Length: 59
Image (cartoon, rainbow, N blue to C red):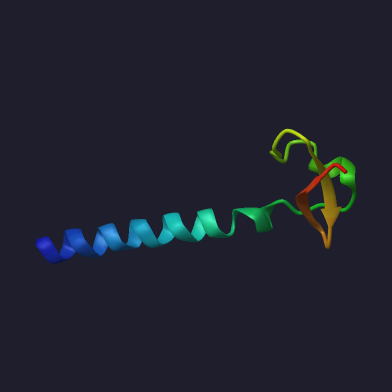
């Protein structure tokens, strides 16, 4: 029983880490306007670079 619980827990942890790690790859874009919902910190703007939304500092 303990082995089944440990195995199930390890699968849940692995999937959680997988989705958190690859979350930024889901933000596919073609133009800067596609990144409006992408979260950025205050003082940063959203840009579409290499088909991914990124945050860049405003200088």
